[in-house]
Length: 92
Image (cartoon, rainbow, N blue to C red; front, side, top):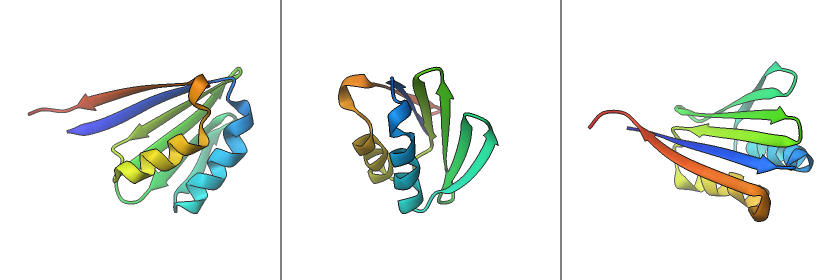
C-alpha cells in the first residue's frame, strides 16, 4: 500500500523558500527537474514533488516514511490556503 498526499497551496508562492529550508533541514536531497518543478528524495522511499503553477504551489508526498515528515511539511504551509487530499494506492 502506498500513501500519497496531494497538497495545493493557493497563493503559496511566498512559502517556497521556507519549504525548501524545511526539506533541507529534515535531510531531503533536491533535484530541479525544470523551472518551477523540483523533486526531493527523503530517506529510502519517500519522494516529494514541488511544482509552482501560476500563484499556486502543488506538493505531492508519495510514500512518506513517517507521519512526522508530513507534519513537518504541513507546519510550513498556511492552513487557510491549504487543501490536502490523502490517497491510498495498492492492492490488499
